[in-house]
Each structure stands twice: as structure tokens, then as C-alpha cells.
Length: 316
View 1 (cartoon, rainbow, N blue to C red):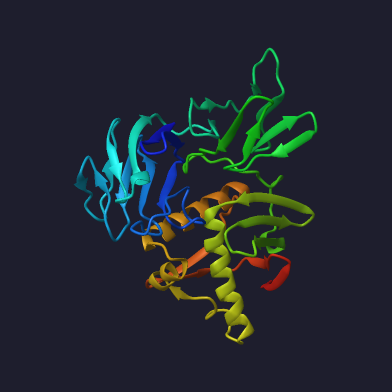
View 2 (cartoon, helix red, strand yellow):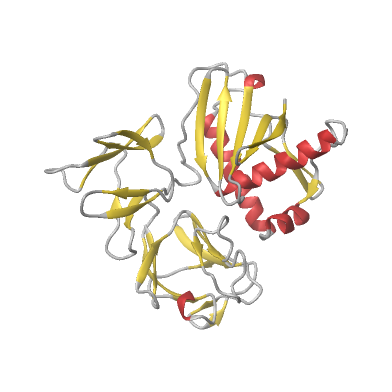
């Protein structure tokens, strides 16, 4: 598990396998509310058994006082100092660079992380457990006296004495999602249901396949998918034929989302990977996002979009 330590607040942050720093609250795992920080300022990722960083900003990112070269992934090492802004709260020291592990990180940002075992972790201790965290059917679950809850990244886990942030560190190449049961899936029956919050800050995705509902939780990349689905829906309402619906230049989509094009590509990759794990198919899945000459669009899946309590519609 990788830990960055903030000198100003004397608090740490635990990194996800792809971790964004910046001002955009719906696109960044660590939000830095400073005027000279870009919406997506820097990305850190676990790749090929090492952690590395890339600058995505207008004003630059300093590593040990030297500005990172734009567009180049730079390996990280322990004790490196990262500066993302002139403000005091935007300087970080690399504390730990262990591989990503799904863990509990102290909610106050101080203390040590607790690595979680898929087979089960008892808290606060095995001798006097109040809660149990384990994996069931591909989901991390929290079992407590009141029942069983599905844990999503960023959820608060609490006992009588302590509180932690649940940090989901599923590797991009080995992520296990809830899988639809049984062979011979009829994807014609599949519908993607997007639930976007009223303020557009949170997006949940549920897959419905016949009588089965598969929650994929709240992820940043779900908003990217929902945006593409909305564009296709708009074109359908305008009467465009199916072959012409929803196409948008990747650069324009990036401007709409106020993020870098490379970050949009990362979100599309994660969305495809999540769906392929949730819906195994011997014949392969149709494309979730289609591409042509620098343009992208939402694929041919049926979908619905709801914002708050308003049903925006969908396509089948």
C-alpha cells in the first residue's frame, strides 16, 4: 500500500491503483482546493510492479524541487517530495510504496493501515470482534450486529473505538467484480442503469440482466459512461439514425468533463474491465465504448439514466 504524507496537515493518504490529485471533486481521489491546482493535476498509478507519477497540469508538478516533464511517467521512490501548488497544503512526502492492497486507513489520516483478507478480518480484534469484513460473491462485505452491508471505495468503517476509510485497491489486471451467474448470457436482455446525483458529483451503475440485478457501485468512470450515454440519447431524440448517434471527439469529451484526454482513456479502460469481469461471455462482449478516427461513443447496450429523482430516459 502506498502512503503519501502531507507535511502541512500531518496526515497521510493511501493511494488507489490509479489515484488522481486535483481540484475536481468527482474525478480526484485527493482533492486540493487551491487556485493554482488543475482540475486533474497529477496521476499516480501502480504499473509493472512500481508506482509512478505523471503531471497533467498547467502549472506543473515538482518532484524534489524539479518540474516533471509533461506526458512522461516518472517512477517514485520513498522520501521523494511532491509539490503540486504554492499553497502549504499541497506538498507531500512519499512514505510507503508497497503494492496496492485493499485496506482500512485511519479516518483521521494518522496511524497505520490494516490490510484486509478476502477470507475475513475481525475488528477491533479477533478476541473481541464487533465487525467482520470479508469477500462474498466478488464483493467486499461488512458484517455487523445489524446485518450485512456492501462496502464501496471510500466508505467509513467504524467500531466503538476507531474509524477507518475503506480503500479498495483492486488491481486493474485482476479486479474481481460480482459476476452474473451461469453460462449462455443473453446480452440482449442487459440494461445499464445509471443513477447520477442531483449535483452530478456521484454516479452509480447497476446492471439488470433478466431478473438479476448486479450493482457495480459508485465509481468515477461511471460518470464518463453516463455522459456518453446521454450524448447518444440526445441524438436519438433528435431523430439521428443509430449509426450516427452519440459520436464525440475525444478532445471535446475531455473538455466537457474538464479532464485530460489521457485520463478519459483511463476511465474508459476501467469501465470496460469492470464490465468484462461482471459479465463473462465465451464469445466476448460487444464494445462498451466504440471508437473511430479520434471519436468515441457509448456502445450498443440498452441503458437508462436517472438524475436525482428525474428519469432522463434511455435507449433499448
